[in-house]
Length: 353
Length: 215
Image (cartoon, rainbow over all chains, first blue to last red; front, side):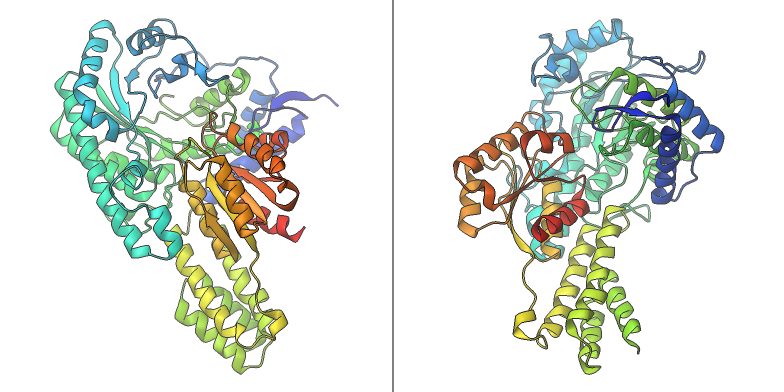
C-alpha cells in the first residue's frame, strides 16, 4: 500500500497511508470541537486537509490572492540564536536583523524586542529601548511593533516581591495565592502601560502583548486592562498574542466585563480582546507531540476557524515551534511548517501569521 | 440510599469540591455498614479522576482542584477510622520534583506537584533552578520512588540527561524511577536519555507516576 512520508508532533518522520491521515484529520477536528464546544470541520474541509498532507510537494503555499500578513515576533532571536545548538546563529545586531527580516525574508510587519522579552525588565531600561526603536524606525519601512511578554511569573518570589502562588496553592492557601496574584497583576498592568506609552512617544507603530496568560487568568486580566488603557491614551496598533489554547485558571475567579477568564478558548478570548480595544489577535493552539502533524493541524485549524468566525478584528494565528500544528522540535521541518501555515489561512481563515 | 447511589454521591461531592457533602457521604457509608475500601475505590477515587480530567480540559481550575482534593482527604479520614489496620490508606509513593538548574519556569511543574499530592503521593518540591546534585541528595534523604524533572528550554533539558548520569554514579538509579516533562521535552528525548517516563501534561504525569509505582 502506498504510504506518505509525514511527521509526528515531535518532528519524527512517519509513514502513513491516506486512510490513516484521513482518520487523524477527522480525530483532530473532533477533539477541538469537543474541547472548545465549537463546530468540527466539514467533510470537504477534511478532504482538503487530507489532500494537503498527501501531496508530494516539500513546500506548499496558499492560492494566489490568498496571501496574508506575515509578522515575526520574539524580535530577531531566531536569527541570532542558533536553534540547533543553542548558541550564536548569525551575529548581527537587532536593527540589522530586523532589516534582514524586512528586506530578505519579506516580513510585512516586525517587532523590536529586548532579549529578556518581558515588560518588567524593560521598564528600568526603557530609555535605551526607546533609542533602539527610534533608530530601527528610521532605517525600516514596514510597521514596527514593540513586543514583550506580560510574564506575571516575574512578579512572584524569587523574581519579584509577591508570594509565589505555585508555593501557596499546594499548601491549600488558596485565598493567599489569589490575593498575591491580584497584587502582582496590578504591577504587571502598570509596567505594560508604562512601556507602551514610552514607545508611543518615539513613534512606534504598535505594541505586541506576546505570550499573554502564560501564568494564567490574572495575567490575562492585567493585559486586557493594559490594552484598554493603551487604546484610550495612544494611537498604537495593539496586538494580543496568547500563550496557550485555553486560559489557565491559576486564580479561577477573575473576570473581565463579567466574563470569567479561566478556561476560555480562542473564539472566546478574541471577543474580550476586541472589547478591550485591541486591533489584532494572535490565537495559540498547542501541539500534541504524540499525535501526527495531520491530527495537530486539523485540530489547530478548527480552533482558528471558530476564532476567525467570531472575530471582528484581524486574526494572526501563531504558527511556530509547538503551536499552530507545527511540530515541537528545535528546527521544525519546512514541509510541516508550510502545511500548518497554509491550513491556518485556507481553512482557519486567518488574516495573518 | 442504595450502595450505588452512595458511590455516585461520593463522586459528585468530590467533583463539586464540597467538603461538607463529602464528609456527610462518608458518614452515611459508615452508618450503612459499607466496606470503606469500596467506598474510597468506587466513589471518591473516580470523583478525583474526573476532577483531573476536567482540569486537563480547562473546565476546572487549580484552586478548585485543591479544594476538591481537600474534600476527598476529609472524607477518607472519616472512612479510615473504620478500616482495619492493614488496610489503612498508604501513600502512593515518594516523589522528588523540580525544575532543572538554569531554568526558572515552574508553573507547569508546580501543577504536576499539586496533582501528585492530590493523588496521594508524598511530594518534595525542590522548586526552580535546582542544582542537579540536589535531586540526588533529596532522593537519598527521603528514599524517593520517583524523581521528576522539568525543563522549558533546550539549553536546560540537557540537565535531565546529566541527572540520569549522576543518579547512576550515586548508585541509586536502580532504586528510583525517573520522569521528565516540560515544553521542549518529548517521548523521544525521554527514550534517548533513558528516563522511565514522559508526560504530555499534568494529568498524564499522575497516571504515568501511578503506573510506575504499580511496577
